Length: 156
Image (cartoon, rainbow, N blue to C red; front, side, top):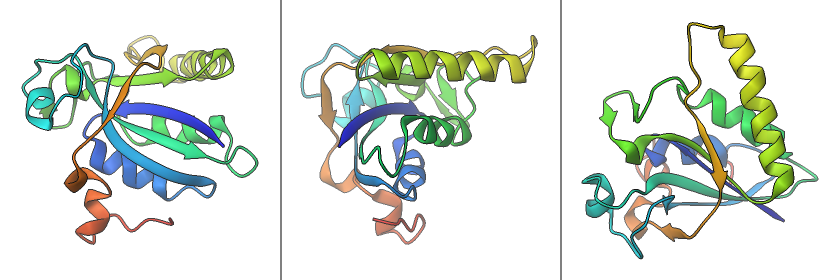
């Protein structure tokens, strides 16, 4: 099994998108990329921690490649919006790929470069690509939030 971590706005919908991918064995929404230790949802939403809402994914690379996950990531949000997705505004909703090793970093940078070419010069891809750091799982009521409310039926 391998791990991947992505931030693409509010983690509820992003998690639901990844849970539909064959080969994704587990998802966990949480907070990463900031400075606070064990942050709460309220602290992250207030923008006081530097963390992004993110999804940590455990996947079987024999069934889903990292490139497959990158495709879901790009399709699940607008990577040209700086520190926002739709009505959600703040650095906690930024577009980010938190890489777990050099191979993921290379794949993420190549995918971003390709997307930049496809998007054209008038659309800037603002997605940050940084090494994964500590990940803090969100409170239990956030896990599989949309599935619990019958709005994001997943495969798992």
